[in-house]
Image 1 (cartoon, rainbow, N blue to C red):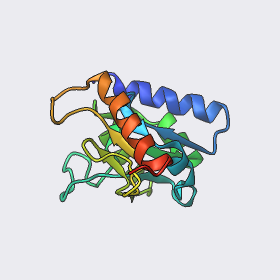
Image 2 (image 1 turned 120 degrees about the vertical axis):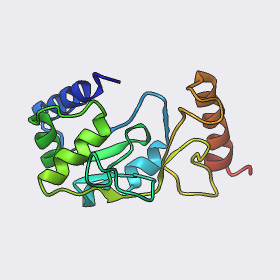
Image 3 (image 1 turned 30 degrees about the horizontal axis):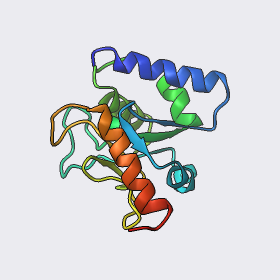
Image 4 (image 1 turned 180 degrees about the horizontal axis):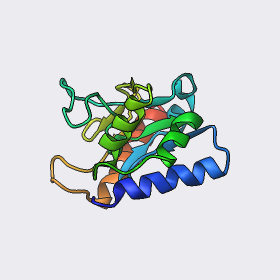
Length: 159
């Protein structure tokens, strides 16, 4: 975890160098329903994600997008992050704090979720960060299980 902020800053620099208008950033253990992701209203906001807690983290002084669930940054936010000094090991907290200091607050969208909440026909979830409960760590088999359930439920209407 100690280098995640540095990696994320480099991802933002890469996107800025290629003139991206938006970038979606998520952990490698996050299931993403791509049609829902692309149909979301991300372009209406500079920074979109989901905090998912009922408190403001005192280290950030604001709510911020939980990194594993994924979040959107527009070109202005990407530029700000790509030039920011790393001030915290937790990349998601660091980004929230840096953007807040630049006048950008996160648009809180609860469709970005953690496991066991997964995208299915009967909900509108976009992502599910598969790390955590019930096993306490990521199991790659879970990605296949969620993908099968999502296809069965979301894409061919069999459930």
